[in-house]
Image 1: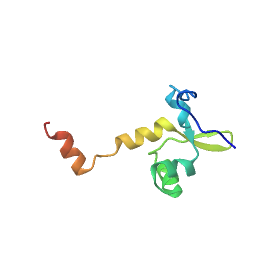
Image 2 (image 1 turned 120 degrees about the horizontal axis):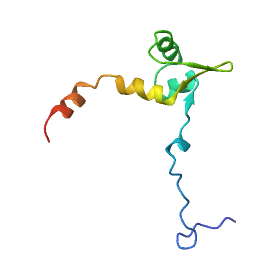
Image 3 (image 1 turned 120 degrees about the vertical axis):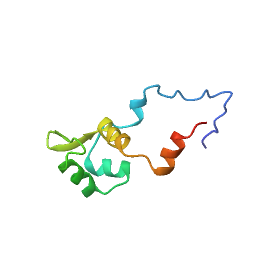
Image 4 (image 1 turned 180 degrees about the vertical axis):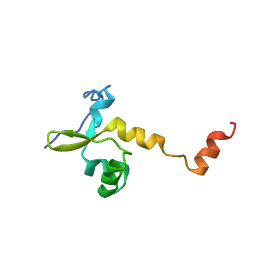
Length: 89
């Protein structure tokens, strides 16, 4: 029978201070599509259109995480987000 964790006896587990430890540094197109919520064919079209830089690692196509973030950050804000950002506090 497994014993229950006792906070006074069992110290909390250490959390890695490295933010890269919790996410990949690159994605295959299928995984990139899942991460940003679009189809795999949309990712391939964005690569073909030059909107996302893709790299070859051996025979595998990969998209670097920072390139995916840059793509998302370059998208326009929604009207409500733009209004909220423009209004004084």
